[in-house]
Image (cartoon, rainbow, N blue to C red):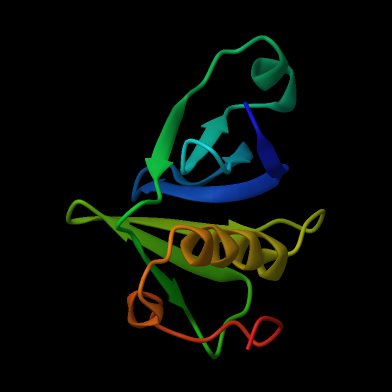
Length: 116
């Protein structure tokens, strides 16, 4: 796996469980954001799920820099920054992936300040 970034984020699961800590790996070659219940599970290859990034739309909240969304195949995934990482880093890497895939800039709902 050619990851360009990995680290902790929280992912919204549902109303009953709310935000759940997950270890994320951004795979540049596959265009996937894979997630695991822990870094240890990632090391063992026990993936919990993944979000396909090709054809996805990134939603960035101008008023809350700790959250962002990725919408693909009519499903929206919600992410929240943990104290150990920066959402801007993850968003920047995902936007770089979009640019590498020559995705139209209009697919990104809001500009990422460090890239524009």
